[in-house]
Length: 325
Length: 306
Image 1 (cartoon, rainbow over the protein chains, first blue to last red):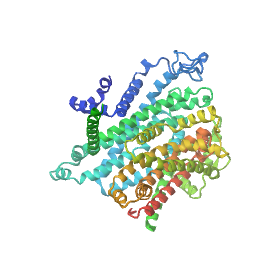
Image 2 (cartoon, helix red, strand yellow; image 1 turned 180 degrees about the vertical axis):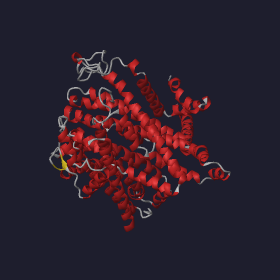
Image 3 (spheres, rainbow over the protein chains, first blue to last red; image 1 turned 30 degrees about the vertical axis):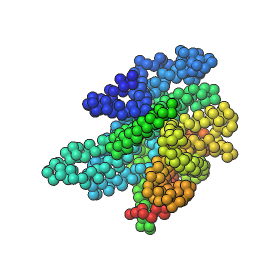
Image 4 (spheres, rainbow over the protein chains, first blue to last red; image 1 turned 90 degrees about the vertical axis):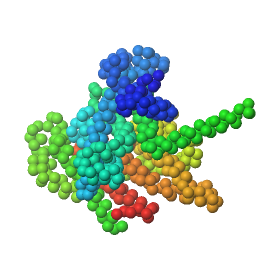
């Protein structure tokens, strides 16, 4: 059942059925990662099909149905499976719609910051010399900035909105990509095949994109996935502080903030949006761990050796138990 | 060593200069301090007078130089909200924030080392797998949410601890735990993985063959090699807490530190106080970075500072 729903993503990425099948089988052996990917895909589907799935308009208020508990508690009803908030809005619908802001901001920021960081890192690593030391000094300086505090100051002056949030988070989070890419480019530049390409007269663009860039794919993928979790948590924190996503739009962080005044009487209002954040970040973390190992040939070999050892141990264990029975 | 410290001080100066430039450009070029700080009902004359008072009618470059000069004198202007020099408010609230950070990060440091070592003793065992799973969950929980859950469980349901504010040592427990949870998870995972790497090294075998006890091997030989990466990550955690996550935790628990003050300054449009806070934190981060580099050098003489 899961293989049917998960096959589309790796297929599209790798472009080969056989390769994708191999990756899927490998993923299936790492159960937490498989579950992680499944949850991510479910959350993405939830965000895309929110208007179809959500039972109510997330902003629709109903003062007679205020603060209803979830369906399985006394006083709850299946009309509102996860209960309602202080304005009578359906918590389930708000959780479903809230995934949109989280994913939109997460993906856009990773894409923007990642592209910029990779370009800067490629440039610094390839040009070397004065350009490199200047760019890396800039990175060092910006890394020492007081991140979230500065974001709060900037957003409070410019005025909060989803666009502001994406731009500000991208501008403050590109350094990690630049550092990583620059390091790899520096070491790859020393290899014989890059030197050979330069000697036979390849232009810098060709050397960078054909010979150096493929080496960057897996480390950058891992960094980008982990950065995604950081962005999701940062977005939630900033929205919680009231300077991120603004009502009437919904966001999980915003919903937790709105529920703060009701924690004494309605625990479910902070619980479900919070759990959604945890589920998203945890699934991405589990999947990222698998990607890191799978994309690194050395780690992959270790994992293969461990699996083989376990298989042999199990085989020996079976033989030992047979006579005993 | 002396030239190294000088160079780091120079770089720190660049950081403070960078923060200054960013704040200046954002507040003066993109934003309008007058409409931010004055109420909506202010007349055009009042706005013009205020703009003149804070020097907005002068050329940008003159403004920037004046801005820099005030910074050197630690003169951030008067807080509109508290009606006294902004830097005074910072000095008054900073100790509370530092107390919270010391408690939270101290708890994380003290708990992560034994937890990580115990997990590393049997990689793949039940304790190890439990530690890794709990660590990953800890890393996935937003701090503001954990704080609210703690309030619901320990303050509302069990009535054991106060919900918010500051005063008795009991007030410190929940905020410190909340603040320490993410660093605890990350540090424990780090101690575990570097400990597993170290325990597979030859020198551990040599120490075993010599007949050294387990506690000595772990506590003296292996731990010292883990310490550098542990300290790096601790420093990084300290900086990221200072740079933002105290704001979240202090807001949740109404802890009267710099972070809560920053939120209150934002809500009241008190730009001067907010600037003073951002600068003090930037300055602190620079100092911490320099102190950390010196500490690395003292722990591991192999590190080349140049």
